[in-house]
Structure formats: C-alpha cells, structure tokens
Amino acid sequence: MTNLLFITHRTERYSYFDSACMALEGGCKWIQLRMKDAPLEETEAVARRLKPLCKAQSAVLMIDDHVELAKKLRLDGVHLGRHDMPVEQARKVLGAGYIIGGTANTFEDIVRCYRAGADYLGVGPFRFTTTKQNLSPVLGTEGYASLLSQMKEAGIDLPVLAIGGITFDDIPGILQTGVTGIALSGAILQAENPVEETRRIIGCGLTSGQGSRTKTKSVKQGNNT
View: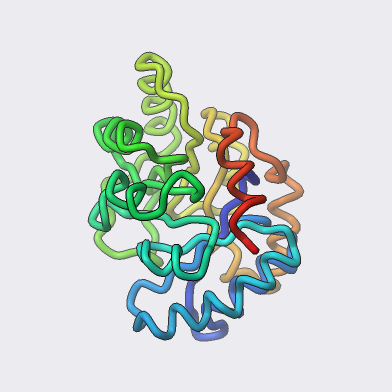
C-alpha cells in the first residue's frame, strides 16, 4: 500500500476526473474518488473511466461513501466517513476482498473503526481545509502524536493517514509523528503544475507505506481487474 493518497476534488480549473488523472501522471498509486455532491450516475461514470487508468498504473482506486458502487464496479475499496455506512455493515456487503477505510478525529473514533474491521484510518483534520464541510476539531502534529501513542498503548495496529489542509511544507513534521502516510487534495490541485507537485511530494519519501497491512497489499492486486 502506497502512503500517498490523493482525494479527487473539483475546482474552477479541473474536473474530478482531471484531478485524478494528474495525480496518476505524477506517480500517485492510490486514488480516492470523492464526489460528495454529485449524482450517483455521474460518480459511476467517472469511476468507470478511472478504473482502467488506475489498472494501467498499478494504482489502487477507491470510492468515497458508495459501498454498493464499489462492489458493482469491482473497485479496490471504499472510504467511509463518520456519517456514512458503518464499517461493519460495509464489510458484510463487500466481504474480505475489499479495502475499507474509516474516518477518525478522536481516539474513540479510532477504537470504533478498529473494532469494526477497518483496514486503515484517515485521521484529521490536520488544520482547517476548504475542501470539506462540517470539519471536526483540528489536530496538528501534537494531536497525531497523542492519538498514535494511545493506539500503541491499546495495541491497535492500523495504518494512519493524516488528512486535512496539509501542505508540502507540513509533510516532514507530520511524518515524524509516526503516521503511515498522507492524504492530499488541495495541496496538489492548487499548485501551478499539479503533476509536478505530485512528483515533488513523492520525492519526500511518500512512495511505499511502512507498517501497511499485508491484507491491504493483497487486495490491491485482486480487485482492480
């Protein structure tokens, strides 16, 4: 499992599809298709276009929220927010052959996702971000360090991706907290050249995830066909 996750976003310059294509061109191997306000038909159409592109780049393609669509299209998995379908319910729908990620802001969220069978956690926000509404309290590096310490004490071993308002300059400090990786959207799309910015970020060492689970690696090879 790569430790750089790109989350699609629509801007004045780029469509959801364009944003994913640029991240792929820049070398990102993990795409989350997030189209929160789009009709299901539009989301499915974009997912169908992205799937062969991700396969060609040996990249993981996940979708935000839409569990049934992930199964229908045989994507690699789904990411579930705190108000989406519960992780345990999604696992019943999808089975063991899909990656399921959960969103967390507190240690209680982490425990809930862990017990429900999540494969990784998107923990945030690091700071305020305009790409997501109804934000939870910001964490900062101290928040990540505290949560990871609590996870260690509780024996919870899950990959943790930092997310929310992260910029290029933030990455070294965030990685020092012990998180597995970084999830980005605006930092790439707001750059003058998103493709080159993706390459620059990967140059920070965000290429292969340390501490990622064998299960997640095997899923990557199994579904995106």
